[in-house]
Length: 154
Image (tube, rainbow, N blue to C red; front, side):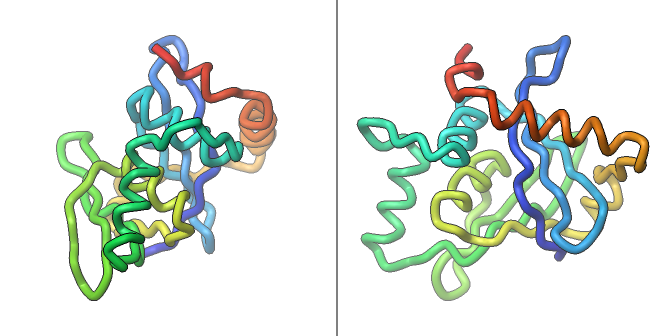
């Protein structure tokens, strides 16, 4: 497993499909995962420090895990089958629960849990951005600083 960090979310054009972009902590590969608008909003809220008046689903799950004293130890993106990513939540003392990567990432950001990815998944779906395209990554980061969670609303 390789540890990843969340670069951010954005809307991919022309399809208007939200995407979360992850990057190897110790490497140069990026992992783009297309996600739903609700999950994109949840990830963007957490990255921007937006606290809704009432807990979102991912906040609720964080609170339930805390109440049960069952901490989220890590998120693992385990497989890619027919262009669908699969992930597991590693909870407490060895409990493994299957989850969508987008929900897993939103929860991991809320509790500070590491996000890891199977080497096979990174080999298959990871991309390396050549040096001449690094300015595109910088533009993406600038976009992330200005995008609002409301931009992902249907």
